[in-house]
Image (cartoon, rainbow, N blue to C red; front, side, top):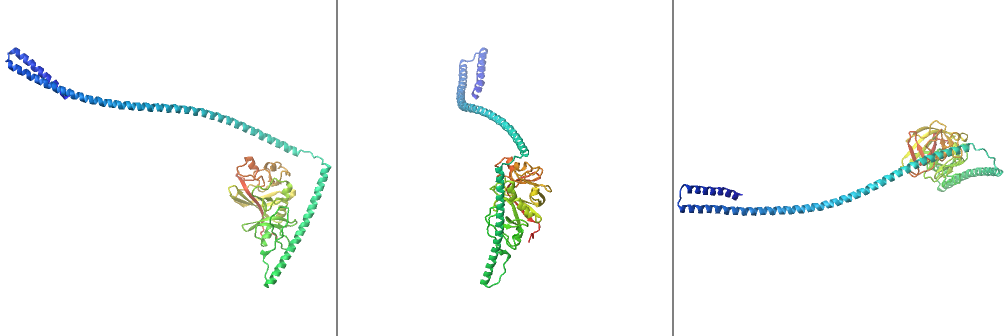
Length: 460
């Protein structure tokens, strides 16, 4: 650029000098040698200018060529980048197509799931409607069956049935006589056993030659027998007669829980399980632990008892009444739920005889579980084959014999033994449960019902 500027500066000077020389030639005639030298100088100046211009142009061409090479290199780099971008764009387009295909498939599947969900909802609604219809039909059939049972006319018995009943009654009387004889023999054996123990003690004292007194804790135990309930081990205390209850046995030195023979006043001998709770003797009248015993029994079995004293059992309403009619008693109920939480509640209570269907009155004393048995009301005992008036459907609806009031409620410790989360809600309601008056329902794993006289000295 500098060379071009210099050339542009020199050329006008040369031209102007030539114009001046021409003008001077008109004015005066210069000597010929001077004009020749002046021409050569101008030519030299012009040649130098042209030479410099050539060098400048050459440098400019070289610089321009380098710039063009740089531009070509940048263009090549740009072309490569553009090519790479085109490849990436192609890949992105392929991925976009794949995503579109996947999205379409998901949309199709989503539609299928929606359709299936709608079908399931419709089926569920139809099943619920069918369930409601079936429940209504079952309720109607139950009402019809109840009416049929109530209004069923008396059918004259067949002579063979009458003779069979008389034969059964005779056999029953014979069995009762045999049991009375066995009880008398049992009493005699107890007396003989006591005499043998006394003789053994006297012989022992004679051999040792040291007088000793017989302690209360070494009272003789009764031999084994076979009562109405099945037993594994039987303990008894014999001291001027058979004890009237577990408190008498405890006061005479037997402080171990187990099975003993008792004889309440004006009653026959029978066996009970004496349970020592916190240093206090209680008579166990009901026990549920594993569901091994069916509690949906008849009125006759609930009256006289069933099961095993060393397992699940019901002592019997008649036996319970023979114990509690001697004095004022406390009823204790112990519950254990499926989370191994233990609860208890105690009542003061009154129990009627068989003529009142063993009517129960309770008043809560203490406990760590809300009350579920109505207080100060007539609670009538009923079973599926012996329904008290006004309580026709409770034993059938809830299974097992229990004390009922105007409504069935949802507490029944003699119900069907159900394990947790294996039955429907109606089945759990029919099972072993304790629903308090505040609405809380306890699903029960094990139960104990125990009685104890308010007078701790009992009947010594």
